[in-house]
Image (cartoon, rainbow, N blue to C red; front, side, top):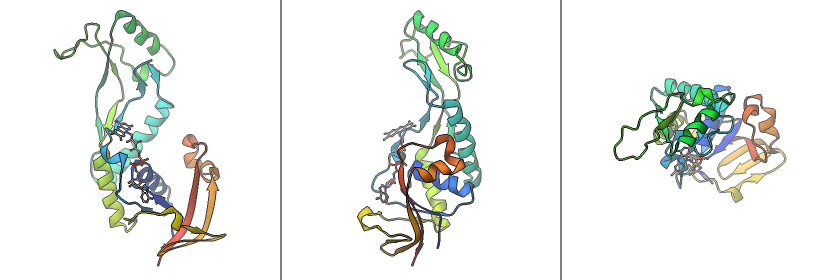
Length: 219
Ligand SMILES: Cc1cc2nc3c(=O)[nH]c(=O)nc-3n(C[C@H](O)[C@H](O)[C@H](O)COP(=O)(O)OP(=O)(O)OC[C@H]3O[C@@H](n4cnc5c(N)ncnc54)[C@H](O)[C@@H]3O)c2cc1C
């Protein structure tokens, strides 16, 4: 089997990278042990607004516009729901905070994520005499269910190798990569360059990333 990419890790990052390659017609395999995974225990909450200062998260609109259709596509293919709407409200502690909420909402691009009506608190256990403000377009990704379903799909395609990759066992040469039973071909070491060159990743291209992209086969 020859693939474009060998992905190490089947947490959210590895699986989303796998899906991106899949949606763009690239071949891949995922090697992952189950030693630990933040994605297994994560709350999975997504919230575009930083509640302390009422500022938007980095590229909030762009991230949501990208992520939600991305997960919807996977839900459709795998026939399972992972994305659930989850309300997020902020307790306003004083009238000045109510003013700050509306001042923030007047900023360009904020109206989409900040409700213009304040809510009365209906939960007797919570003290909120100055009302609640609702963040819009919040939700929760069931990360454990997503991970389980995606891994199952990978396994059915023969694309999941369940073992630990020991980095010091990787042997790289000019055009060959070996890893135990895995024989690679035309391996190359890249520093940022590959991610930056691929148009699909350009909106989110991280800086300072170092990665190894390999063509490989299992013997
Ligand atoms: C308790 C908790 C709550 C969180 N809540 C939220 C939240 O509400 N909202 C939010 O946005 N984020 C949340 N996060 C953060 C978010 O979950 C993580 O940023 C994200 O899941 C990380 O995904 P990952 O793929 O980078 O890493 P991981 O999920 O840790 O996946 C890494 C994978 O790589 C595998 N691996 C590592 N080394 C090797 C190797 N050498 N060979 C083979 N496999 C290997 C591991 O076994 C694992 O499967 C939370 C995190 C935690 C811990």
